[in-house]
Length: 180
Image (cartoon, rainbow, N blue to C red; front, side, top):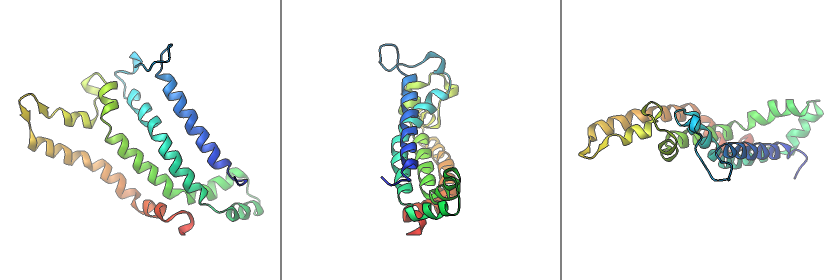
């Protein structure tokens, strides 16, 4: 590992810590997974596990993006007298914009399309998410197909907007850091 590998190591360590803390909050005294009663009617109970399960792939994508930054760029920043924090803010973050937008779009899609966590972790109709609302178009007597298709079309709009705002950075992220 090069001397600037602290960025990747601290990112992976932070992701592992966040995942561990989130999952520890969902384990009971005997280590079995349980659902805290105070989070049943709260969307935070859906947001935390969704974010925790997105962390591993986001860490892999972002660490790969940050590894693409050449050591010569770090050395040039150090010769200019930049501190590690300034190097991170002025060098690493701008060059990682593609990776950051990739994980933003990936996480948004994963959270928006989530069905199992909201189904298990929410009880009241007021905390149900869009995918569970789409599921409600199916009844014991049939499916309201025109209503379902209209709702699916409307549910695509937020994810489409996320993609439209991040598409340029996504393409840059596919090209790699520094436009190689």
